[in-house]
Image (cartoon, rainbow, N blue to C red; front, side):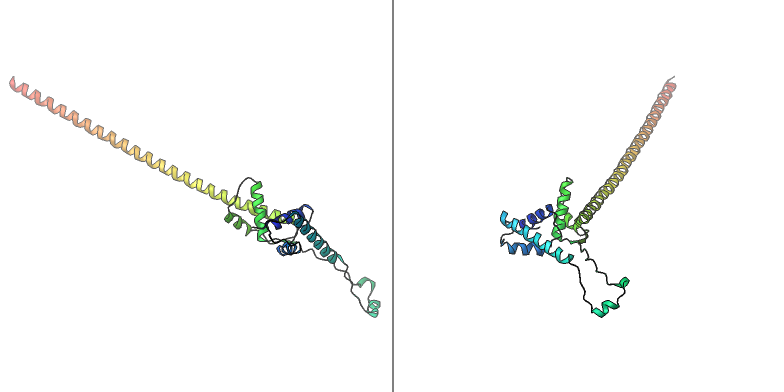
Length: 218
C-alpha cells in the first residue's frame, strides 16, 4: 500500500490536472521537502511537494516542446530543394506508467464505490489483469473497470454453476426419495393383499370343517 505522503500528494496533483508521476518522483519530492516520516507529513511539506512536482512536470514539458533545430552547412542548405526541406518531428507522447500500488488503490476505490469490498488476494488477482502503461489516465480507469467487471462476471458464473449443480442434485434426491416411498407403498399394499387372502382361506377352511362335523352328527 502507498504511504500517506504519496497518497495525499497524488490526490492534490490529480485535482489540479497533473498525473503520470512515478514512485521515484514522489520519493524525490519527499527528499526535497525533507519529509522523513512518509505516513505523517505536515501540510507545508505536502504543499511544497505538490509545487515541486508541478514545476518538474512543467519544466519537462517545456523541454519536450522546444523545437529541434538542425544546423546544416550553407552549401547543403542551398542544394536542398524547397520541397525536400527537413521537417521538424513533433515530440512523442509517452503516456503514463502505473505501479502495482496505483492499480491496488484504484481497484479498491472502484469496488468500494460500487458497494462491495474485495479481499487482498482478489485485489491482487484483478491487478494482474491491468496493463502497466496507458496513453492517459482515462484509459487507465477504463482498463481497471473492465478488469473488475471481468472478475465480477467470473464470480457470478461460478455461483450460477454452483446453483444449477445444487438444484440438479436436489431434484435427483427428491426423485430418489419419492421412488423409495412409492416402492414401500407398493410393498405394503402387496403384503396386505397377501394377508387378506390368507385370512379368507382360513375362514373357508374353518367353515368347511364345521360343516363336516355337523353332517357327521346328523
